[in-house]
Length: 254
Picture (cartoon, rainbow, N blue to C red):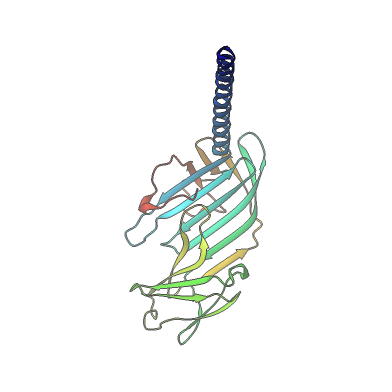
């Protein structure tokens, strides 16, 4: 009887040993697969950016940022609080050769102020247009003294009351937020509009076609010129993001 028990115990011990080995190998293989997936995703999704003009008069530096999804598509976003501009371009890629790609715009969103008369003003009311996609979003307006008001966007046509004692001259500014989150940075998109700004907020039909050169460390438009202050057409040259902290505590959306 004791010999039988010892034999059973020995058999159980041997089976447990092989089971543990199998589990360990499965665990190791699973970890390897996870690492491969993570590595492949990192390779397929790359971030390129350039942060500049970190002036003391703005809360956010100018930021040009691009996310590359493999070699199929990209999102390029250029924003400037100082110039009250935000543009977001979604595009598809078609290879020309190993490094040059044709870029065709599929969606374009723009927030801007161009120095002309902005809103239609009637005493204490702002009237402006925005894309219908933002209907029912909350419009947040912050005056220079820190006072913030919130209103609901009703659709493409909006009439919003404002405090005409806090916003009534070319020296006054309004920070406007439309409830739209930056796709690549953890923040809400914001316009710093002055009294003479022509605020535009919405999608545009843009048949933009250009070319980019992609390398492991950089992406740039084919016609990029470092000497051209306002080059013709879309132009950028961005370095691959190296995980270093962004100015003013900004964080990338993961």
